[in-house]
Length: 458
Image (tube, rainbow, N blue to C red; front, side, top):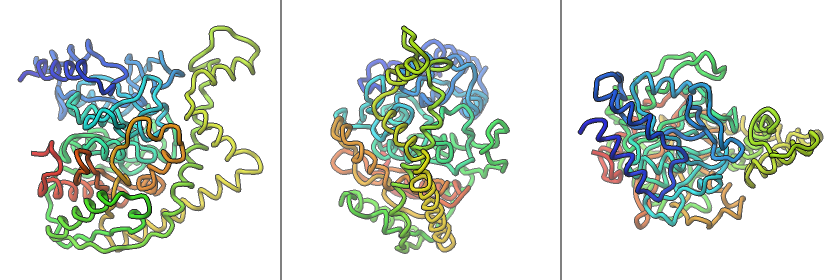
């Protein structure tokens, strides 16, 4: 099959789909690049491969909305660092995927462009906030995708959609060109149908970027070279704190059976306790919302973003621009974050959250002194129904209970399919120490290679 035929197949799949996985599809650009690929004009590890990009990542000349009315017509004048890397390797950017508005959500229901649906059951959510990226890969609308993960936004949809998704070590992938939600927490990461494809995409986008002050100036270990290494003697920590109240019995059962598979392959599993994790959810939301309130202050409509047609005085225009440009969930988080940072409450909330984060990091550091990786459920249950939780924000926030600790600790974690409840996928979360993505991919590949839970694997 030629690259043009491959791209046409993907574009037709998108056209026929009712998933609403894409906000913008670059039909003309994708077809043009496919012709170039067939003519041998695209070189690199991803030459001619159609890839979907979360709509929070800047793409030169291609609309980037962050799923918000505030940026409905924004077209960036530059490419994000990761997009430069993809283009250099010959990838074909097929379009920009649906997401929760400004990455704030766990269901892709807060999008100004309407909710995305789960390919396994269109009455259910795909997870969030990178729901469109995971759904597009699961439904063969793209071969690969990029998402971003602030508190689980790659791993959650990877789990719900039955694909592979990695949240890298903080600083391992440049954030330059990513529309920010929580600066100290977020990372761009790869989504793919198999572990090997995910590892390849990660290696392409990882690396130092002088334009990003948080980017690590360290060499990137080749994950593909060690992906099939023997895991005999590897020590797996099983934090019981990830199996607490609210975790579905089917999810716990699938996770423990997955651990048994790895033990049969020669690994050793030890149950451990990480008591500070009980602070993770409140600490994360205080810090993330506080950073969001600062990051989103720029969208005033005066210089940047959506603007009401009729101007009044500065205060009224500013207020109306934001009131009409932001959705309900974004407003809620900005208000809560502003409150947490306000005089008289900074020490009570934000500073206390930072102290809790220090305790969580210390717990992970202790765990990795004795264990090579940690394993837990990605999500407490399978994908829930559209509309089931959108009016209950606290219920949605609880969805992140098993994913936010990793972001607070700035370490890598990957979600891989490990079973099903009915026809709905269950995700296994493999957590590594800082910069240890290669080991995480190795464990994931061993599990994928020795089971049949990933329907996309060879």
